[in-house]
Length: 359
Length: 72
Image 1: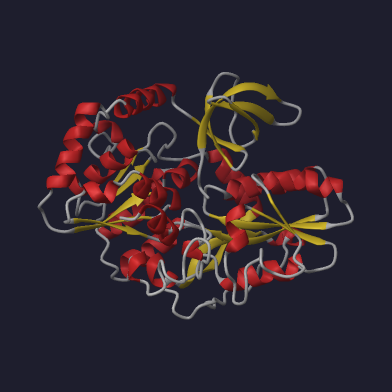
Image 2: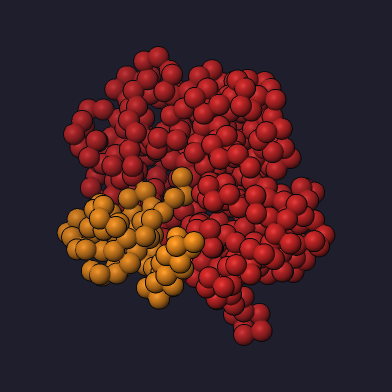
């Protein structure tokens, strides 16, 4: 990147005096209203947990986008997981978030006769498979670019160790295509907080095409209060400019983790993907390459999305059209203990975060 | 789900492609394979895998600032 075009978070020295000045700027800001979208569930949580909306000018509006992988997974995928979990000598293995997501009828946790296990890492499935070779274990492989290399590493291990009783059910998503859709659909977004851990893998340059095409600033952010405040400052200051600024340089580079990218490309290829609340977005997902089809647990065609409660507004919350408290169910019949939609299930979901921390 | 944490590599097991990582006293075993790492390095771990090395200089800047903010 040339010197003139260089954009780096180090343009701000994150010192206490600067953070105080930044906070004052964001509180006193009286320019044109700016709508800033974050597209990472961990940012959603960090913003709420740190009370950041409460210290911003009313002219700075924060909107949660489709950044929680659990929240954007369509109900047909959960239905398929439940079907697998009830199959003879099959066990679904998953991250905890997915257990309570409602499908068209119930959640995996509620499904009668379901066999499932919750794990910390997809790679934990290897020991499970070795311990019970007569049983097939199916990992619920959802996630964005951050998690996809972990599934690639799992695939590499399965093949190297000739483990045959593990499959994966994929609903993997990629960010640039859905961001392009949001920008082109008139959602009225003026700036994006770019997802820090996605960019660890992809590199910050992944958002350059959208930044330049729509003349919007993208700032790659970390997850602490000072990271987010300086990110918001950079976004407001760069409104109307098609730039990508790396404000998380401790772990993010322009080009990302090449080794992880190569491993992803070895096992997965781009495909169309269905996003809850958005629909089909061309080439916004990844599935196993044809040569590894024997490891696929039936991931194709899981596009249908049906609400368990017809009044649930998760689809509008995910796309920034409604804030969680504008949903008629929010805080009434829909709470973290009685979730009606995916956004209330995951701790990274907009509704769950709003319920937990308020505005 | 994209949560990742910073810890320090305590030891490496090259046979198993794993690293023992210390997160402020909590010890876990994380898979290598996405990034070459050495003992003593700071790393970012997600879902049981090391995703990236962490710049020591930037991390120390952050810790200093976090401490200052904590004192407020």
